[in-house]
Image 1: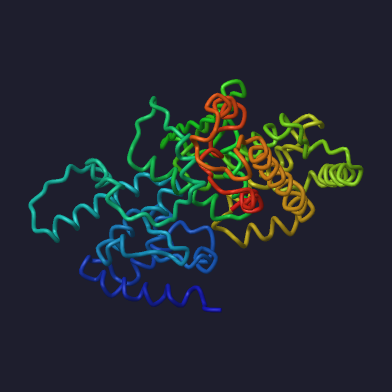
Image 2: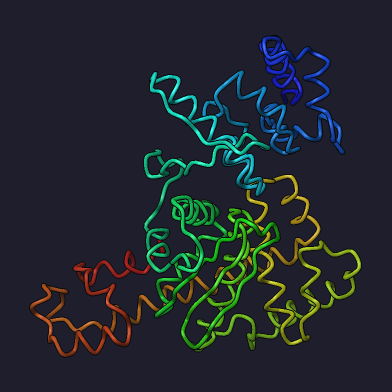
Length: 401
């Protein structure tokens, strides 16, 4: 395995040699890089961050300016593929985001040779001009059909100023969830929940973790928090699982209240073990025991997708948590996900069997009784009407792609 300091030292030496024209000598650059560090250099760079990423992490504005003069930020990425701007945004360092935007716009002007005057804040040197449109950028992630659907039921609250980043952030949040096979079923089942809407209230002044409220009567989920992909993804995954299980319970499938003795015994064993280990629980799971005992099972299991989403880019930490809570994760993988998949298959079977057909084939839409189609649209949804496969395709229809 490569030494994480090796690539860093090479690039740092280049920065030092290039920064002499900026009246920074080697000692000053090293001092800037290490000022305020509360962890050693190797630990700080365990994700193979570049010097610019480390400077952003430590909010060292002076060093960031030096490094930006050395190399354009849009051409730099760490081993996780994060650009400096995205890295700063995920850390909620919005002053640095503005600085990076200002530097990028200035670089464009210098390259084009056009005289363009920026308005700068006297204290921070940050451009006060509006950010460039994200729509002009090439997406760095793939948006699947599952993501397209949940995007269609997601809205930005109008009371908060909407920027082009908000729409792009939603795509990234959903793409991150969709990348994780253990979270993907949560996106699948949103299609089965009627009248579901998700509202996002992004607040760039809020540095805390996101929170969530649910209106069960209107089928609305409100998520409030910073423009932080990890925090929002975790809260969303946690809430969608709750909503999913409520929806399944309403349809006579109770994954948390199984009558089978074996599963109920395993549930009680998990809760008992975690109650005994409460003093040593991961802080993220600590809040589980603030709830009444009859809600422990639901809250406990809902922590799993929260953790999977929150630590999606920190695999060592995620692996450690899973090792310490293996029984909980096993239950999520072996019981909860299976219940969700079983429900989806069962719903597709219902639609298949209830569909009115002439003879042994689906035929064309005009062969159906319009009145019956309308009634079944109300009961089962209209997605199945667009499928013109014959009866031999039942198995393929029921497979959750």
